[in-house]
View 1 (cartoon, rainbow, N blue to C red):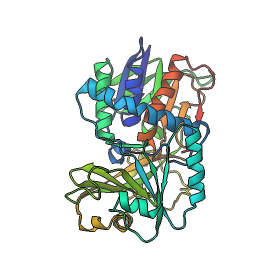
View 2: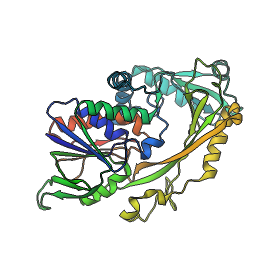
View 3: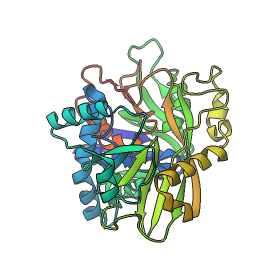
Length: 395
């Protein structure tokens, strides 16, 4: 059985590796760019599972599954490829500001305990003792999640690609999809016969669209457009030259939606901004959908806002004052795919089609949810799409 995956960010690569372990599948992955570009290349890799506010249903289950899988996936990929994947096992520390409701965190601690996960609430004295680099008068305490993780998304994606290649997956980079040939519109459900690409026609039994923002024009070619909008994120790499606080305890630190991520050598990633398209924001999105030609280059929709990036840097310094002395090594940005008018991510069959699956629109949780997304797609394919095969989960 032939499977074609369109898109090779962390989601497409994870699906390719997962499917490569299923006997009888011949898998091809196409991407118009090299692997780990777009939102994967810009992600900070902070895996907020147990410390997230998602507590039930698929929204929690997909996080739970992914966090558990990463514990085996990282050593598995390192053994297969010989690549080193930076994987911070020292947890995530969430800083609580004075306006936060500590009772809600105490409730989450109880819920996670009942689910077999561990969270700790630290008062300011304990926080100061364990993480002396954190010093801000408005911090009332912290929640520590020892089982959550952080990893390097690019290193992960490249390892997934290499491991999948070892298992026989074919990757075609620099190949764009031009059109799709489908069964007649009157057939119900329809099926996609083949894709026309810049490298010729590709036929398959299953097509998996994992192209992030590129999923919208692809689904439009199938007359079932899935509306996914870009949300820009900017981040920076700062060099202090030595570890902040205790060199033997370097968790990812987050507070007020700003992440301070240790990446070794006294360097820290700091981010990320959340920047919506012009004339739009989270509560009032763009009313006029951009033409498809603009979607091919959605960067034109959102010029990076330097003031927002500076505000993120200042917030990080407010939490960890020693960052004020840091040198900025680089800044970068990327576009996150956010589904319009529906929860993120979009995992399931393309409406009206029997053999086109969607694994897209993960917004800010693509790296976190990649393993569980790959599991879900595998189950839909090996079960021949029995049932409706659709996931509705909150982002």
